[in-house]
Length: 77
Ligand SMILES: [Zn+2]
Image 1: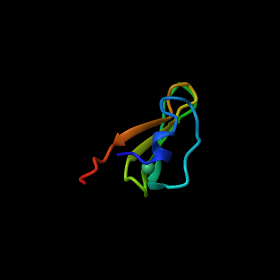
Image 2 (image 1 turned 90 degrees about the horizontal axis):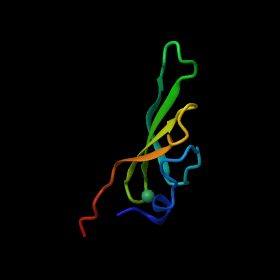
Image 3 (image 1 turned 120 degrees about the vertical axis):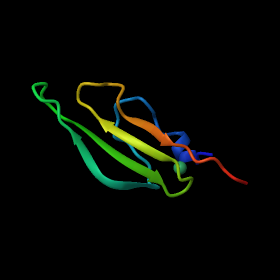
């Protein structure tokens, strides 16, 4: 179950807005595109409140690239 902050995060829109409980996992990956100019950047985050795992894509050529859910943790209770 997502927390209210994750539930209100805009998905599939080009934005860098994030919420205060997201914690970055690992390093930002640079996705190079030889011959096509600017690279895309992919960063993974996890929410410290609801443990939803997010992927953020920063792609200058894709307006729909932004937040997407990597893994939604189901509530056991
Ligand atoms: Zn959350």
